Amino acid sequence: MIVVIILRWLLGYVSFAVEGKFPERFVNLTARKGINLWKIRGEKNSVSGYAGIRDIKELYAAAEKTENRIHIVREYGLPCLFRKYRQRCGLLAGTVICAVICHILSGHIWTIRISTPDMINEYEVRSVLKEYGLYEGADTGSINVSEIINSISSSDRRISWMTINIIGTEAEINISPNLSEKIKKEDPPKLSNIVSSADGTVTRVNVYNGTAKVKAGDGIRKNQLLVSGIIEYNNGNTVLVDSNAKIFAKTARTVSISIPSNITLLMENGSSEKADLSFFGIRLPLTLNGDKQGAFTKKSSSQQMTVLENPVPVFINSEKWQEYKKQPVELTLSQAEELLKNKLFLYEFFMLSSANSGTVLKRDIKIKKEKEQYILTADYEIEEDICKKSVIEFYSE
Image 1 (cartoon, rainbow, N blue to C red):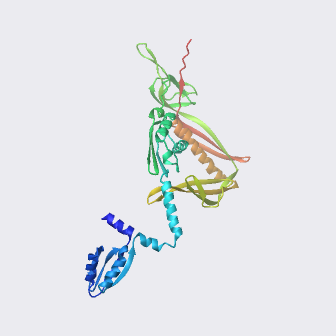
Image 2 (cartoon, one colour; image 1 turned 30 degrees about the vertical axis):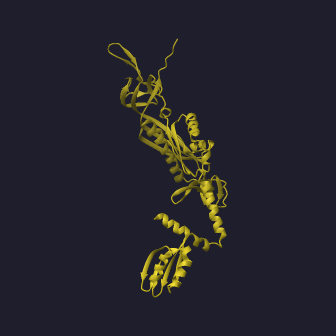
Image 3 (cartoon, rainbow, N blue to C red; image 1 turned 90 degrees about the vertical axis):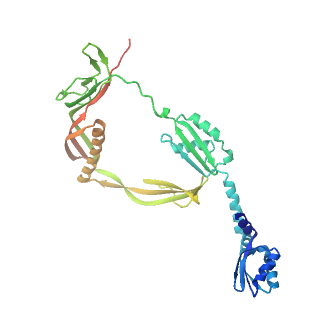
């Protein structure tokens, strides 16, 4: 049935209406002449239906012979379109050119989809694929998939295996990592003692491996032996181990941070946008804004266009520029205090809490202005892990 509908559209057909005293005679006569009518619908003194466009003359002759009047309501199909747009040669030429371009581009890569592990950057993969001839706009007939896979897999040890599937205008690349390259072999364990990283008073001792040389309440000096890697057993045997412990002590520390009283701030000074259209590597500017000078931040984005939910190799690239101007400012005491305390907070977080599992027990902060700068001095009392490994060296004669 679908084939019949397509043929009727290609050949063209019309809808008609016949009026008269005996319209059924018209139908009987057309049937005897072999004229194909369909969807015939009869009403009082009238008949309507559809017939092929090439049978119009026969329809008029049959209506005249049976003393009826025939009216062509509407024409359908390809011949009707040709007659309707025969004066618009540009439209026909554009349609033909568009069809030719689509046919040519259907043999090129429009989209490349890459599935890659975190250890391998997608941009790096695209650059390597381009060197081997696989990129947006590449001729699919010139792409040697086996050669690309073998060359990349053998030259990059991070890749265990990869697949390249080219389906129509889309290339799909899947990469599996070589875990043996990601997991580095650990060095063999070294034998070590544990010494103190600062002066202080021991508060807690937790030894997991080795022999403790201090106890809670002992005063210690920097680089003093805290845990020995030599373990002596009651039977007289001696074993060397890699010491492991957590020993906490109260320590004192003074921190000094300074900032200039006159600083230069970057103030927002307007923004602008820049956009272009890229097609198979060709970039066409959509705006006339040039590159900015001076201080600025840039945020870039790219959006691939789709036709009927299918991606096409056309990208709209946009850049948003935020410009800044330099503004000299003289800090007040309250502004300087806020900046200095923020810096001190970062120091405490990274150097105390994170690195040494420390806890601030006491803090005394003083801020003063000296010459052209503000100086913050902080005196701390801290409880922190003071363990520092000292590798036991062995020398051979």
